[in-house]
Amino acid sequence: IHAEYMGADASMRYIVGGLRGGQELCSRVKHHYLVLPKAHMSGARELKPDHIKMVRKMYALAQDVLKFHWGTLTESRIGFKWYAFEGVEHLHMHAIAPVSDLSFIHEMMFSPDSFVFKTADWVLSHLENISS
Image 1 (cartoon, rainbow, N blue to C red):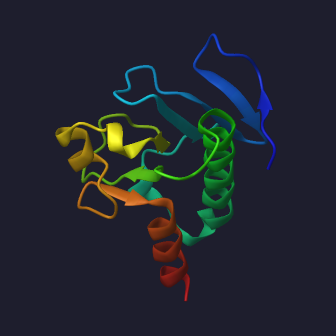
Image 2 (cartoon, helix red, strand yellow):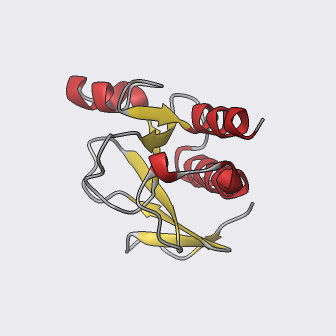
């Protein structure tokens, strides 16, 4: 997926098919981007096996955006918050780099495959296991 870069002065600047991506405006790290579908979904726990293709596209866009701005996927983390309840009730994938810049609290919030955050790889594996 090659995202069309729309500029650096607003939040949602990448548009690919039914996805949008852009910079998280309240971030604690240099590179923190969000990718979300245009169609409304409450959160990652709502995902079903039918959404695997969409999640893969979201993941590819998140990787493209990080590569464009960070230059690499080294020291990055891509995934979803996995709360029992959603603070922001619209599905969105986080793409973060460098993870070494995360504060202690944010490292806990975005810790891979923790109780509250799941990597994109974990979510895809989870959805594939449900479907088989």
